[in-house]
Amino acid sequence: MRGRTFSRTQLQTCKTIASNANLSDISRVFSALFTNPLGVISALTNLDPTVTTDTAPLPITVGVELTPALELALAQLGEEGATLTAINDVIGQLEASAWARSVA
Image (cartoon, rainbow, N blue to C red; front, side):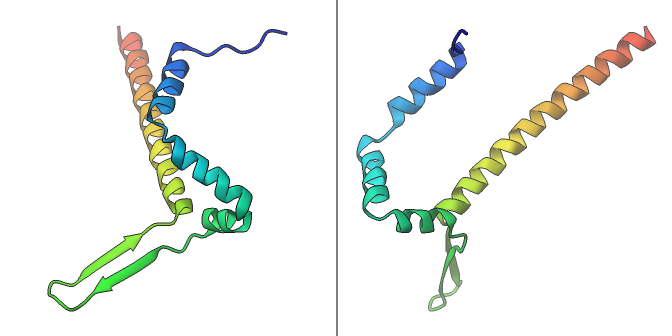
């Protein structure tokens, strides 16, 4: 059985990720995972954002800090939205092409 090979796009994506990766941050994540696994799991499963307000000066400012789990969910939501938009565009092109052939 032959192994799966990577396409050029997949290889380019891997190279981009590797070139932009911060090895010290990655090592800190693994260090935290091994020294405090419950803290890491809690950080990834906590969905409560931190909301801060400053009412002293006007206008009032409100700050929201998202948890890592919410950031990941929003990033995935954006990716899914882009994928669905691309699929919708392709379906529209296919429908237009089929309609043009049926009229001709």
